[in-house]
Length: 282
Image 1: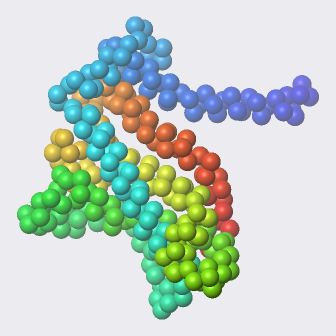
Image 2: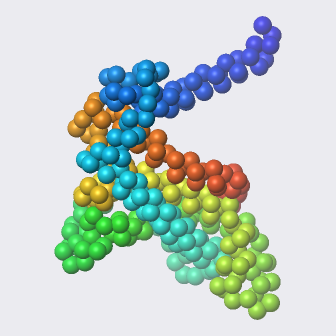
Image 3: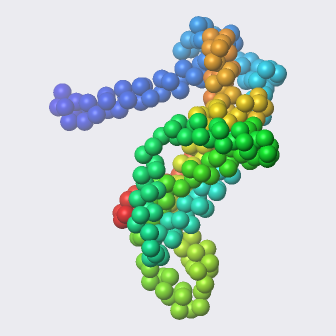
C-alpha cells in the first residue's frame, strides 16, 4: 500500500494515458486491415485481416492516391525549404541589423498570425480566378500556384522563433569574421547557418507537417482530381461514402503518416535543442 501511494499511482496513470493515446492508432490500423473495408464492420481486432484496402487504394481509378501522395510530398518539401530560408533570412535581419521600422515589422509579423487563414479565402479565390485566366501555369489546380500561395504565409511565428535562437549566438562571431575580411554572405552561410542547425530543423519539421496536413487552402485551390493533395483527396474519399470507403481511408492515413514520421525521426536529435533554445531570448 505504501508503494502504491508513493509511486504505484504514477504507473497506473501512465498506463491509462498510454491506452488512451494508443486506442485511436489501434483502431485505424484495425480499420485498414479489415477486409470488408466499412466503418460498420470495423472492430478493434479484425477477423481475416489483410492488405486488400491498401491494394484497392492504388488500383481504384476513382481515387488517384499515388498522385495525391506525390503532390503532397513535393509541395511539402519545397514549401518547407522555402519557408525555412525566408524565415531565417528575415530573422537574421531582425536579429543582427538595426534599421528603421524594425520593431514595427516584428510586431506586424506577430499580429498577422492572429487572424485565421479562412478570412482570406474569398480574396484569394477572386485573385487566383484572374491569375488562372491569364497565367494558368500558376493558377488553380497547379502545384506552382499552391506553392506561391503557401509562400505568402511563410513568414510569421517561425521568424520569431528563429530570431530568439539567433539572439543567443554571440555577435562577436560576426565581428571577428568581419575583421578577417568575411562578407555578409559568408558570415550568413559559413558561420551563422551551421550554428543554428537545431532551430532550422525544428522549423523545417513544423513547416513540413503543417503543409502535409493543410486542408482549407488546398481544398479551395485544388479542384482537379489528380492535382489534389492527400488531405483534400482523403477527405473527398469519405465525404459522401464514409461507411463504404472507411477501410481505404484508414489505409491512406497510415501511408500519409510515413513521411511525417520519417522527417521526425531524421530531425529528432535537433528538436529538443531547437525548441528550448529558441525561447531563451526574444
